[in-house]
Image (cartoon, rainbow, N blue to C red; front, side, top):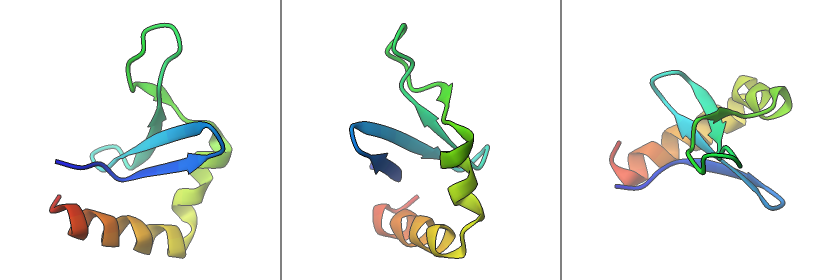
Length: 62
């Protein structure tokens, strides 16, 4: 099963629909549980981003 994500340069953030937020990889643990910066979280307020997330979720069947 795929994941909806956002990538900015070398930084990748996974979208978590349950919490409606982006998570990044914790450099210490390697787990995808580090909350993305506010600037990335603020993208979720953008209607175009919301529509892209919905489209991606439909495409991957989530």
